[in-house]
Length: 222
Image 1 (cartoon, rainbow, N blue to C red):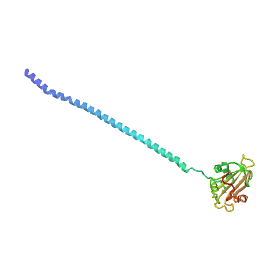
Image 2 (spheres, one colour; image 1 turned 135 degrees about the horizontal axis):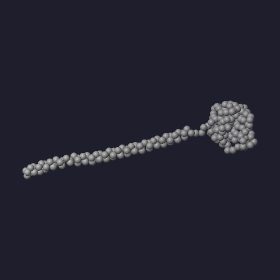
Image 3 (cartoon, rainbow, N blue to C red; image 1 turned 180 degrees about the vertical axis):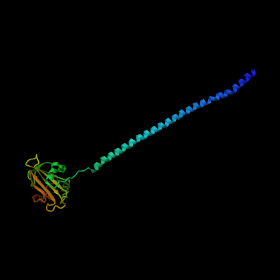
Image 4 (cartoon, helix red, strand yellow; image 1 turned 30 degrees about the vertical axis):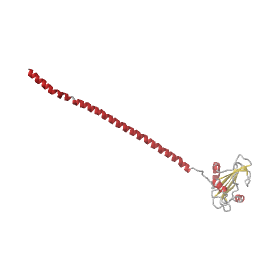
């Protein structure tokens, strides 16, 4: 019996380390779990970095878009400016009806003009006020002997009053050479009577012949 007990004790002593070794995989698993957690942290960090990268990319895109829009806006703003300017519309000379409609629309009111209504010093009589288009204004200012094609003037006729326009006298140069006044279109209406509506009208050229290339209006405008 004592010998059997001694052998049993020896066997137990030999197997004890083996049982302790069985616990190592558990510790190893624990380490694996810890590593897994660490790996999870790495993945989370990478995801955060990706998210930050996407956020930075997203932030950059609106900045570029705004700059582009601003640039387009500036170009759009500058483009109308480059094409914007005073349009020197000529009075139509095809018919009295078209001319009267043009006069009624008041396009000539943007032209250089005499400062006020005054008594006529010419053949029209009554009170008048004269407007000259930019082409004629430049030519008069330069004291040109011949005015350019496209020079034009509109004279408002007021009769004896100053409150109501009762007629118009219009002249438009249609050719570089005035000839004997045939290079000018002439129009005059007083109340309901039209006295001129053609080129080279003798009634008009006879009086205007003494002016600077048929223009009697003094410069600078008074």
